[in-house]
Length: 188
Image 1 (cartoon, rainbow, N blue to C red):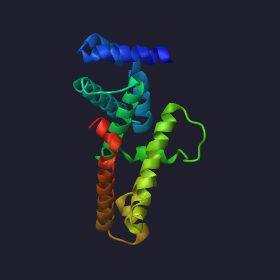
Image 2 (cartoon, rainbow, N blue to C red):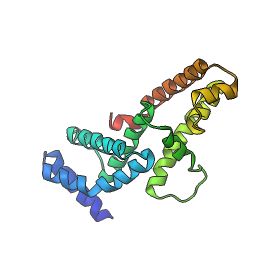
Image 3 (cartoon, rainbow, N blue to C red):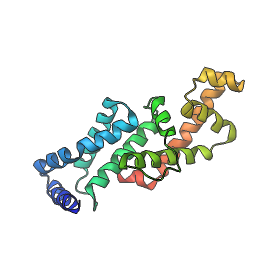
Image 4 (tube, rainbow, N blue to C red):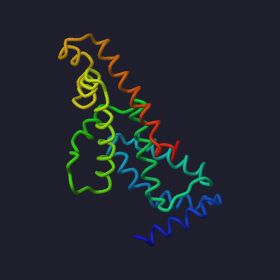
């Protein structure tokens, strides 16, 4: 494993010198695992490909400023935060929230993909706990249970406009929390 890490670092040094062949080698070395990871969370092949394209373009464009000891980990973190941006920007379908819901915080054994989903889930659940009661309840019904605005309004005996407002408040706060996360500055 350390041979691949050393090899990745050697490729990265060539990439920093604008060697496109080295970049292509690094891309082909990691793209399948990164795709499985992104698609496993997004459950959308096109969105997963978009995420990878954005991460690799960013990686190439910022190659001179990047300081990393593990290129593979750096790329996985990049994909993780690009996925988080999709969530923040509301570009994901509710199926992503349902997938995140299926992973229990107390699980003891994870493969790499499950660990990343677990971290994302813990971030989202930690965020949800900071919301005011009414906002938290509406957000959970929408994003965790997958109810429509109309179903939430009927269940809580409130207007659909109130549901929309509460979800907007929650998403705005989520956006703010994610932009304050120092790890996001790694990529954006």
